[in-house]
Image 1 (tube, chains in turn blue, purple):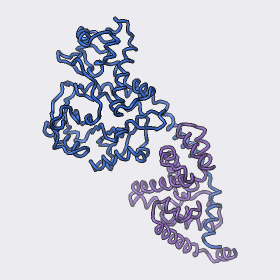
Image 2 (image 1 turned 180 degrees about the vertical axis):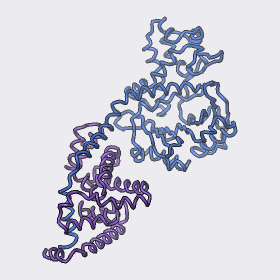
Image 3 (image 1 turned 120 degrees about the horizontal axis):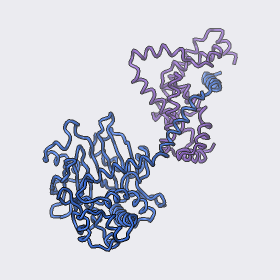
Image 4 (image 1 turned 30 degrees about the horizontal axis):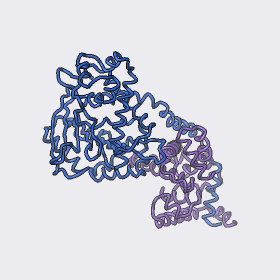
Length: 357
Length: 191
């Protein structure tokens, strides 16, 4: 008998004598339950997420130029790191990032999701989000939101890239601008054709700068960047055909006697004015008296839910338009968006002037 | 179980279907465990590797190509986890501790080997004495019955490398089995 035969026969015989101990099966079963169960408890996670997202959304005062509110991660379908790597858009996005910032090659994908209508047979991704983090607990992180239709990276957030002892907000304006220039230059295009304005925002909680990158001779910015804490948050707002929702009255609320623009993009809504049978200027006067939108609506026999629905729908439609270059959204997708934006709407319509957000 | 069926089950399992998980697990665990036993020596390590393999099964399902045999994919997972474990193991044990780890290995023989006759025990020991790389190739070739080409794909190394490991492995086995006591040799020659 040849040695090959002998080995084969021996291995098969020996295999027969080996049985997997029940302890192992038990452990794997537990791992599986653990994998299945977080899915069930997702609900509570979402609630926590919503709370923190409302907080961050409101901490950054969005001025007249602000892009339509981003629909947040939690209405999205999660993806695994491996799915991102095999996905066409995901791969292209990562490739772009790796080429622009080669150090990110060693980062691991810690979160990813996509936004799309699960009922859409073509399965078009509207937006895909990827969060990468450096290994080794440095919390150096980069978040990318890629547009599924154009393939562009339309939103990018870089967190904790500066050492903790010397976070971004302690740097001089020149240094901050240089950091942002570097990202745009690497990720998008040559910075030379752009004019930049840098201004510090009114935000007592956190030093915040807004940088607008405008093509020479053009009025609307192409890139809008917020720098706060130790993070740079960049939106590619130009280039897409969407226009920010038309703002008819600015500074609907005020805080410490200064106009507060936070809610402008939510409340400047033609349909809301129609629903409340009120003109924007009157609304502003009413709000100035210290009433909330909900209270104004109640005095006109309009329920809170009606107000939420109207505003949420406008926000959802704007968001979709911004993401898809004017394609029509399906009703189920709009509903999904509306649900996502609802907590923010709620915060806005219950807000009273001269109070903290 | 055919591939299409298996794929459906895996999808159900990933979606959280306990029943599907049990079907997949029951259909695979003995074979997977045996392969792991041949490749990994310590009982605790086998347990860890087994757990990792099944975790991978539901997290990396996206990579599964339903056109390829399910067992091939599964063994790919097994090999990758065993290799990952070895890399980890190497980092964990510094040379000194590693030496101690080796000396302890003797007590970790499978209980069944004790019941085996001398020849079989000798084959078992000889296989364990191969380098990890040779051993993997030998087990895949003789236990899983893969062709050398398939092994090259599984391990993601060139065919030539597989061949050289295979022949070196066989050579080493021949050598240690040649050291059989004479009366045992007679028995073998009788076949």
